[in-house]
Length: 181
Picture (cartoon, rainbow, N blue to C red):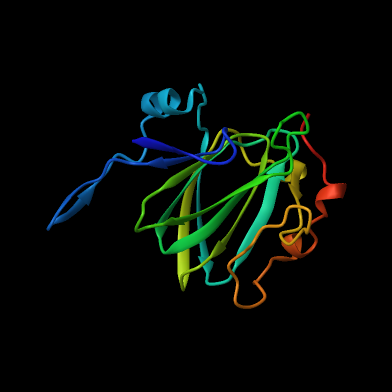
């Protein structure tokens, strides 16, 4: 695995070593020891999630204000435009975001540590994501920042209005969100 740094030092793109030939490919999608060495962390993942979305479905920007989740996200079918927003008030990159295309083709993984809001939009006809989390889902602590907040200024690659859930349509402006210290 190789690490690709982003504009926010704590958010990392992880590119696995792919072994391939005319038969197909193989890669180690996760190795706890190697992940901790590459990221300089000592995280333990407790939950795996699988998400499927149709084209132009936008999910996010989600986070849990208590029991914050670090996420290791990868796409196993299709492609998405994935975004992580720093909502740690004490961080030098507070309010900034990282944008990256994750796809089944590039096999990149995105490490998003606790303290970030996360969202994505499906670019392909369908997209399936697998992601590991460092804490359990706690719906009572789940929060949502508006996907189109002008302060954050995410340049979503959309040709039309995205398909949103009720929760995502009710996302709060960044200025009114709950942050981490």
